[in-house]
Length: 335
Ligand code: SF4
Image 1 (cartoon, rainbow, N blue to C red):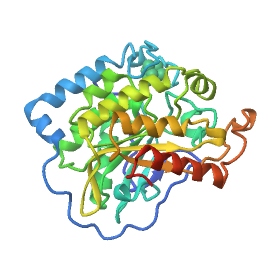
Image 2 (cartoon, rainbow, N blue to C red):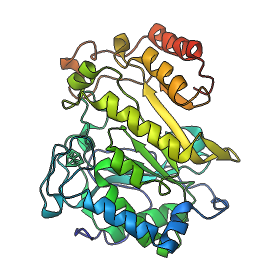
Image 3 (cartoon, protein in one colour):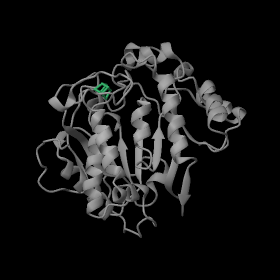
């Protein structure tokens, strides 16, 4: 299945497809050798398995059951669900990026592709122009394949899809086009973790590195600070466990991530993210070796000022307490 869309007519290696977006577009360092070894998605393409997965993912697209909202929107006919995502493939920006965990950015950067729209819709969204307003441009699957190939050509270590959940079938269709033309980088799935389990299961062997957030542990808090998703903690936990089952612990070669799971946890004012509960869950369900990034960069953005205490940054004491909880829980692979 192919989505229509205006061709971009040639690519720079980094572009914002909307006004006002920003990402690191520093000059390209020299490209080194490509990651060694065939990727599993290439084997799946050869065996026909990737075609089967692609079809199964498109089956989830209309009526849409890609995420736990289960809107049932007929997206192939252009109907949007809660995520407001259109039937077409819409991309906000792409380019080399370094503002991500070091084993993903490495020395040559990750090839970041920001998808427009979002299925979770947090009230404090740091990228609200993309996620809530849907800024970006409609492109074709061949365009997206060209983006992936161009980011590979300039030496990026991997391709990171940011907020990909509602666009997964498009991504896999573009991947198949790119594979036929020599694409072989690890795929990184950088997501809120608000996924349908069925969709994540279909990504087994396609995604190399999962980077899910685990934002909230409490249903009432999740409902209040997202677009009404009290089931976020439940579905995020199930999705992350499935991601871990698929790819296991985070693995690097020469310091660059090749496969595995990194969980990202943003500490929030007054422990609204439930950091103490989160770190205990990680240790009991996934093990103390799990790679976890605990972030202190919460800023009040978008509608956060309407939801105190989201109207302030976290304090140094709150962040220190979060790290203490991680240590006390037994986590030792966090930063
Ligand atoms: S991806 Fe969007 S349309 Fe599909 S179920 Fe989720 S919110 Fe609804």
